[in-house]
Image (cartoon, rainbow, N blue to C red; front, side, top):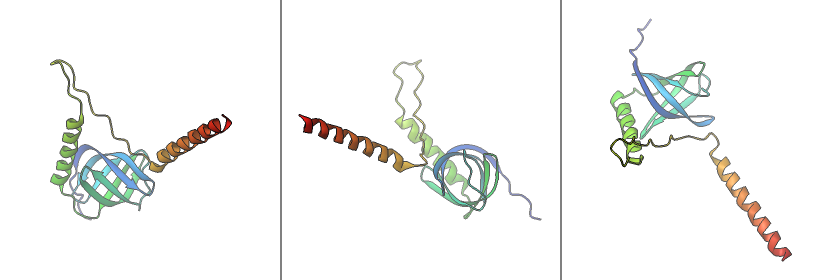
Length: 145
């Protein structure tokens, strides 16, 4: 039996794509060939997923799920430094977008959280439908004048 690879505890927010689309996840530990994530709706074991953090994309297969936690076996060896750089790159970008406080004692405002939607076209569909209904109402109103 092979010894278990060493794990490194982390807390890194990221995004994961599976068959169900994109969702926000938290990377909780990493090893050279895998990682443990927390996800609101973990995909089933055997599902291939993509995990993104800033400019870094990692692909792997879900090997276990327990509650909201899941283990992923990566297709390529994980470069710890690249993941930590991506986490810092993302943090630096969020700090650059955050509004600056004006007073010396005023707390700096945090950037709003990024939310991935499970159905990205739904928003466009609702917006288009609203515009179409407004156009029809306007046409009917002008026609009656």
